[in-house]
Length: 606
Image 1 (cartoon, helix red, strand yellow):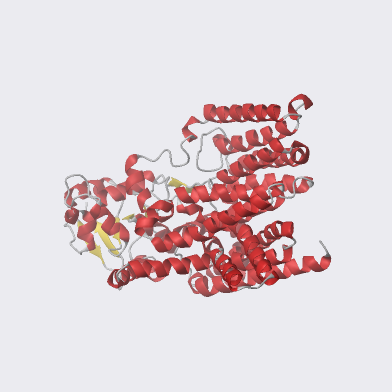
Image 2: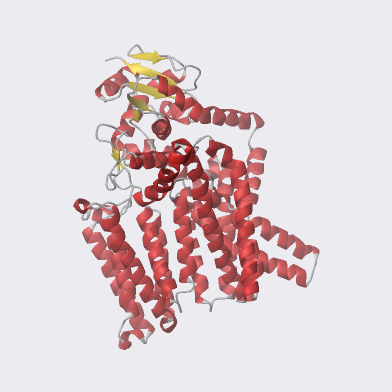
């Protein structure tokens, strides 16, 4: 690549980054300035950072104010907490703690956004270069990335959660794997990126599987070209896994079967997977020189690795949610919006289905055309593998939409560049429409707009207005202004609707029983059981708990959900949730005055 052309690439990603920053700051900047966290995970991450700054130990993963007295061990990697805590600690003496948090709330995600756009543009450029369209694909990718809202929202001001880090590491792995055939540093970096993304959160495990799978397949069919990269990718993955286990997990827990965070199972997956990659790359000639030998070796080593993992950690075969009981799955999981399947949105929320899946599926179609035209270019299968795995996750749970949309951008950019070239080569109305359609179809923002328009056309206006009113009322309960009213209440433990849990922790000194985290089974189920029971049944549950108060927001969807899912033998309108929702207060609860607030707090009489 010439220096001049490289400069064009830099201009493209800087332009895309700048556009994305303008959009995100305009949309989320005011909320970040007031530390208004619409996403509970961002609030909880800040709680963890504050605890670390207050002296909580590196290996102490317990959120002590969530379901006290024992607290709840969190499944998030503390290395993200440390990267956030460092600059806050440096800035706090100069500008104060709150201002330091706000500054980092802007600087952290927007810096990561720059890395994400840069990597995405470079991957798209490599894809476009197959048809002499590197520059055009880079520019298209810069614009598409800026408008890829399911992905770029993870980089909005105030985004303390780890998903943005995972997106950067995932795209870094793709970028490096596309260069690992000839570059040892790239191959090692790809393995390290995969190891880090898995150590960050459980969502990284499928990305590791995608990376190992596609690199193994490339070696299987073209061993002479990809053995080198496969070997050093395996070294990087194994090394990262071996390092991250002792870095993030205390020695006493090194052998524990933790299925939803970095621990022995994840480390074993990285070590075994990396070891298999190295072993395959070093097969003796009699096995390496024929497809049957390579296939048999791959199948044998892969089966042995899977069997070893299952033998060592059988409890993890069902995934991180395997330990959830039936009640927790049906009464809690169904309320977590990002845990819904894509198919479930077809009946309940067409607009959201279009927004989360449109660009990803369009990118998958574009990827199919690209691979068909360039089947001989092995590196093109790398981003395709990551895209396929992410789309599969999205179909299962829409939480995968951010990754699916991100990995679709390079292929969408290629399709846009090709359509533009074809139109410029021979202009016509049909080619103009094709170019416009492909450009719009590759843009997540266009799909979101189309979904909103379709939802409006099929939903009665009164229903839409009612939904908007209910959403606004529900959101009002989680604003900083609303949550700060709880400071007037003497410090205690709240039996609460779980959607309010993270906000209470970040804005008050109170403790809570419930929050939207699957490890908090005991506290969350105590709150759920009380809310869906009759007044007398609820009294027995609440009095036996450690709670001092009951906290509800009548406008939140939880209120109606627990009434609809009343305990056996209880009429929906007689559940504690329904009673408190309409202001019918049982005698064993005493209202606590908190001024003008959408929240309702009741002291428990024992």
